[in-house]
Length: 471
Image (cartoon, rainbow, N blue to C red):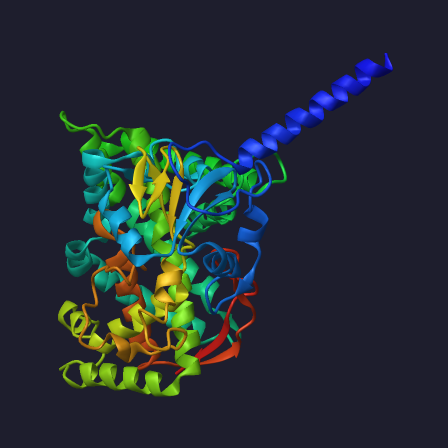
């Protein structure tokens, strides 16, 4: 009997050792990039999620660049990943959308954004859905409609904020943008918008996580948040359908429903709901972070703040009505403001990476990139590269003088690149410009408490960012 037990234990040890070996040495029809796969299933996720300073290249990335070079393999949240910090490789990968790679994120993000969300659509269907989104956040609608509404919203909230001696500007701008998005997309009043926001607060927690649907995990909390948010959006859609004859809202939901009702369309109500869910998320989360960091950087660099004030004061001086709203021509004339925006998002690197799924084996720089793996482009390593930027860790908006301010490039991917340039990029820039305009002209502000801002790996404001706004 004892020998049977020993035989069984030996079998388990050998099987486990073989499993570990196969995990650490994945099969490949060629030579994989160097790297480590970590422990089975968990990979190197703990190291990847370890919090670190806002400044500089994340230790997870820097240590592996030093050891393996600009292209290496790893495993994060159960997925096999090739990481690139090479601008040339990054540019090549972004050009291969729909060929060698397709848009993707982590498995958890795919489930949280929904089975019919942006991530699962490629080629013509992606272009169609992207154009639907641009109908709301594209330059034409920003110019015709949203500019005025965003201007009014910003002034209204800034007036309210002056009554507070200690304002968390990250949370405050997040709420402001969320309410605006919920109003434009679903015609929600403040009460319903805040109800929906409570669900979104849970939704974002497990965006990059192990997809373990078990109570107590961040992924479970996110899926519960998604479930409640989708329920409220569907209820709104159904109410709109039942009262369509008397509806005079004409919001983005109405626009999507009109597209659903067209004879030749693949758009369904299920796709529309997932599009709405992700679009609202995209409208507030990263933009509020960028606005907050802009204030942090401007507070640390008074000469830049002064230069920004000069630009906006000149805009006011040329107006007949000094209290009028910002015009589209004024917005487009804010050259230095856009330099500040670009420099902020370059240093912010709000998203930890740009992800693609490899759809067929291909060779690059002598290595084989296998089908089924995830490819992670690391913009932060390029944005903070001394080879691409002089004194890369410094906040210096003037470095953008004479450069293209509204396009992606090999060395600037804060808003994505090539076919997947962020549809909401213009919305985010406009929101930032409007807030900065009023904060350096009509209002004054001072930092009360910067608290602790870290990456883990996404940008995280552990205790907010406290300011006082006054006239």
